[in-house]
Length: 372
Image 1 (spheres, rainbow, N blue to C red):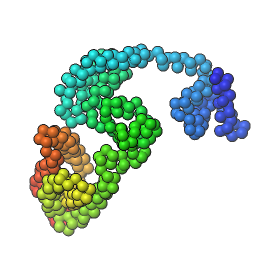
Image 2: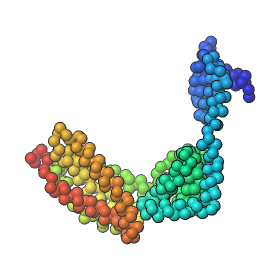
Image 3: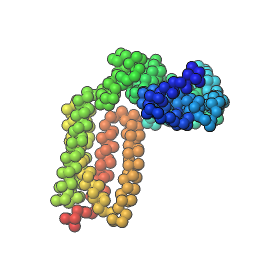
Image 4: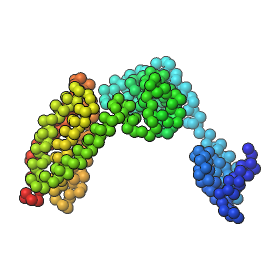
């Protein structure tokens, strides 16, 4: 198709979308055509390309040669032209064993950390960074170096697809012997056999996707989430009402003491039974006592801070507590489970944190207006 054909096609499309007798300047033709093509369902890349070409062909101020020059300039990037050679270098490093030695070093340094594969990738990037002076080339080389090695270290390949196929990624995972959990979207069913090389769930069904990963029936997963939410709402409101009548400290401390006593037995029961009804029962039991105290604790803390500095102080206290405990809990608990082999360490950790909270709550002053 030459320039005349493109101009004629653009004229037909513009004539179809513009009112009769209306004309536009060359500078506006590209924008209108882009919107028209997008409305007709053309892929974004093609709509941008066609509308840009029409802009250069119909513009009265910019020569059409500028468009050709811009296309040619985009290809005159030395790092981009060198990418195939860096991919080749990555393949040579894989076949010669250099990759395995680099990854072994990085794994010895960071493999013990939770999320060790990601940490290994970061260390390898640090070791290899700056060799080429190009971020694009580094990414191309390290993709070939790290991809196969990381797949060999994995046990399950989890990637939903999100409206795209990513077929080569699924094929590489299956070639490495990993089962795949994905959504039946776009071209994914063409490369993943449901029930044979992986599990496919309906597109957009988040609950089904989570259930496939956790190997938990959808009804149980939904029921536990619903039980947690309903229990939280009911017992937060109940705790607030009772704290107005009996005071903040009793509702902060005593439900937490009961919660403290129930944590380890609840987790042990769940670990021994591993059934849906037990999961829901433990969820309701622990959530109920935790919620009785949680909302009251926030209110008491806010009431204990002077009004002029209440907002800022409460925000700082909350942020520091979340950064310290929420940011380290997963790392510490995972490490303890790995070292000791005891899967109840989340319960032990929660018990220790709850005991510290109860001690602090017991030292706080009563802040309920009716009890002062």
